[in-house]
Image 1 (cartoon, rainbow, N blue to C red):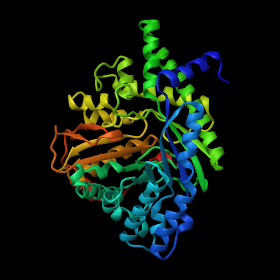
Image 2: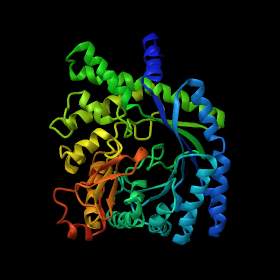
Image 3: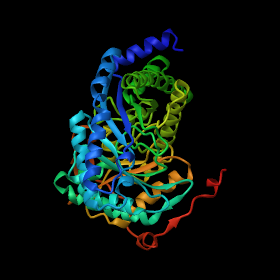
Length: 457
């Protein structure tokens, strides 16, 4: 239970430090909407989302007002849409995405995830249809996000799928050329994709999940940063283990708030509560940055030697604090490093302190992976596939989730500035130090076998 100091610290977070619940995400299973008639699927999906989520936004607002905690985003995750597309053409996929987009407008949510395919061991006809429909589906919708899982520790990595998805990312960027390739920012390519993640663009209601469920994402990098600032003021030069302990206690309190809100929303909607995801997901606002936490810890220039160790320490502290606070911690739960969405990390990339290769090293010890990274518009599909494979290899080998969200900006070159606005932020186009020389490797195709430690049963 929370003691008196826990209560006062939590009240300060809410009243003075703008602690918020970043997202309440309603998971909705759409599998019952399957039909041989594409038009019937589209109608059934729209109706199911509207009926199931009609009270999500008002209930979330009521609960937020009751506890004095802002619930910033109300979102929906659905079961993988590729399942519905078996036996259908890409046109049906696009129509489905557009129907889900209209449903989001009807119920008032900001984003919907689950326009997804799981292809770690092979690609079915429905999964290929979904991937082929992604350029038009993401270009013609405002709320819909997609994901593709291309590898797992148990299955290895599907290189054919990686190459297909890399080519598709270029098509998505070209289809949204007028928006500087923004459509690619709505697609996340995973290894070891979690089934209960409430954060976009990778949210999905996995095969093992209930018919409907509430999952909550609680962020709060600004709260963690200010807790470390106070420790520095009190102690002058605290040891790193003291800083880790402070971050852990703060994560504990934030998780308790998120679980309280999530249970109440679920109770009022009459659906099960799933998990609370304590992911330090930043926004472009100053004071809401994960990068600022590393700076408070003593990494004045992000990318300097020691940055990866700082990321590991923070990620571990967040997971320990959240796990102690709740038996329902899930999703991704850790520290994100989405470049465009974190002003401190974006600034480090702009000035050259933080390279793509250093970011890749950091992803070995953080949550997710290479996230919201701008690349030149003439980047080849083979280069994109190599980036995805490298990141997937980190996840598959280390039994962790890794993801890639990269945006080839049509017509842009390294050093150009791109601003998507809002939560998606702004950043500078970067590129690998050695962008060429992997064509033969990628075009071998096939499958990278699972590592030997996958035989853990």
